Length: 219
Image 1: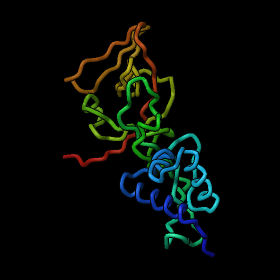
Image 2: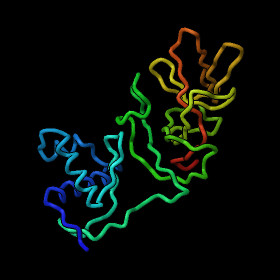
Image 3: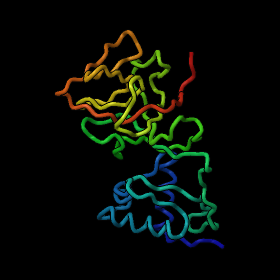
Image 4: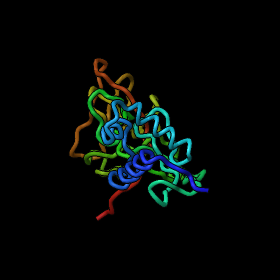
């Protein structure tokens, strides 16, 4: 049985599909509203909820890009009964976090490049996100520029673990070293200096590294 879409619903579904193909992630409600001249993002939300009720998309709460296609329609106005594309029980859907703006939450929408499905068995603990590594300070630990570091969110870490830490307005990947009340963030590259954390510093542990996905081949 075909599912009937209104012309506007079909247009929005086409926009979602095209945006995912072009950028790897769905549009925001605001982007949909701007594209179709809606007065507010609420109008876009109404159309998205209608598409979700018809089984064409799945909406995720708490994220402006939480739209997942469930089917590919065969024409602009009709589609067969959808067969949802779902992750297997052995897979995780993880956001890829790119550059983190100063002072903003690491999982803020503007930092998320896209979401990808990965095998859960790749990781020592269940990760919450993948952080795109910038620079070569952890080179000798096998963490290279452009790699995706799997991160489990926690404010606690053991001595010697590789962590994602926020120091002031910067987010960095380093090895945690504690000696008494002194905390140091150690690089794994002799070209970089250790970072000593003082009591006056604004320091926070964002999480611990639980795995790595290499995005480029080794030369």
